[in-house]
Image (cartoon, rainbow, N blue to C red; front, side, top):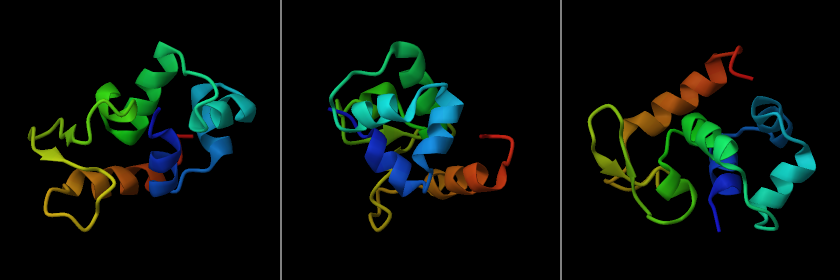
Length: 102
């Protein structure tokens, strides 16, 4: 079980763009998103960097992420919650604005 699809959709990243960044096929990413296959460690680490979450969060071992800047605990997907953190929005804007990212 993982949050790949959930995070990708939250950040409005197309499958094809994430596939290019991870250097995997769309079928592979789809398999990960639908829990048919498990991603390799290198791809997990890259996705954690893209989504700015820990491996534990990505792999559903916890429902909370830790901000690498201030160490606040927050839920990246709950934008209405008081536990959310501005880094979600900062990361989203960075991904959208940084054309070299993909």
